[in-house]
Amino acid sequence: MTYLVADDLPNAPAGERFRALLARPGILQMPGAHNGMAALQAKSAGFEALYLSGAAMTASMGIPDLGMITVDEVCFFVRQIARATGLPLLVDGDTGYGEALNVMHMVRSFEDAGAAAVHIEDQLLPKKCGHLNDKKLADAHDMAAKIAAARKARRHLFIIARTDAAASEGMDGAVARAKLFLEAGADAIFPEALTTAEMFRTFASRVDAPLLANMTEFGRTPFFTAGEFQEMGYKMVIWPVSSLRVANKAQAELYAAIARDGGTQKMLEQMQTRAELYATIGYHDYEALDASIVTTVIPQGMPQR
Image (cartoon, rainbow, N blue to C red; front, side):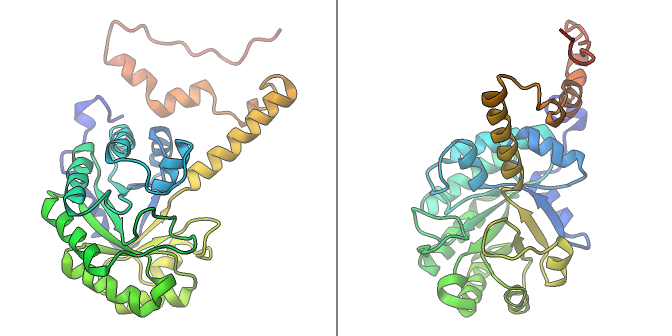
């Protein structure tokens, strides 16, 4: 429990804790967490850092991932996850929400909300998911200016430059952009939508920096494991929308069952129980903070008619 108990709160800035994880041997695995509950479940599974996807955020709001949301809306999600888990969080910063001054505002806002790291991409608005067609790229030097602005504004935030150039400019273009972004101050590079193991290996052999791999489902990248990405030269891997995909599928099945059966009676085995929910969110720990709250007794099963 980290939200209210001061003794459990991390002391070091989130960006420093993120760097410490990267300094260890092996690849840093960051599953996507689209809200505080998902983040708690990922932490319970043993993950030490998390990822907040723009696609997952927008989908959870019922809108497409086209650069429509604001910095303040993203910070609402960042605060949820940072407060609930205390884990270092990498946040999808889209295109930086504007130009250099906007990027600086984003960096300070994300830091204040509890983020550990951000990635900024070299697309133009309206931006697209990296695995879709006909993405419009920003001028490489304009993107480098955003990275330099982020570097100037940050106090501890780890800055990752994402390039979507492989699809339209090829490997040479993606590598050239990556090197320019590193010169501008990026701490790491995220080459998006590479389509073969050979491309991943080639990029890693030509770019001397920590690299982030994106293992999203239903995209252009084949399935690789964390170990395989590590072998190809990558230091970080994310599964950005997986938690939301699974949750959405389960919810659709629930609503279909209610409409079909007139109730949830056939879905109970697929539900998180009240006891499991309360254990995940630390319900009784919160009660213990305030002696005026009577300890809750959890009902044991549902009564029979």
